[in-house]
Amino acid sequence: MKTVINTNNAPAPIGPYSQAIVAGGFLFVSGQIPINPATGELVLDDIKAETKQVMENIKAILVAAGVDFINIVKTSIFLKDMQNFTQVNEVYGTYFTGEYPARETVQVAGLPKNVNVEITVTAILN
Image (cartoon, rainbow, N blue to C red; front, side, top):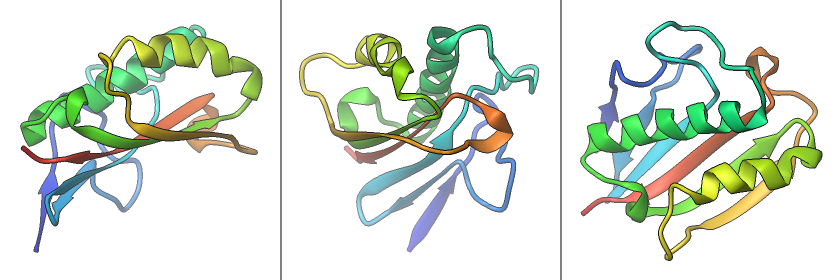
């Protein structure tokens, strides 16, 4: 059995997928890009601002599911340019305290809406 998680505090999906799914004691959050959910506009000021918006979108979905960043066990970060790794890491790291999730970061040829960063997470439920 699965439960769809949807919140107006995160961007609506731009395709045939859900913001997140709860199944088997886990929360699977779809890849988030830097869309401001209040305006529907992309945040493309700089890579740090993009990453912050992505993390805030993830936070909104976690809250809607009743969990927090401490519940995240795995993240995947997709970058258009690996030269942005250090700056993305700086922002990303501020959302965790001590027990960091497993993670991979990969450079990709392109991302939806031509953004520079997309992040997806998997969390355990309380």
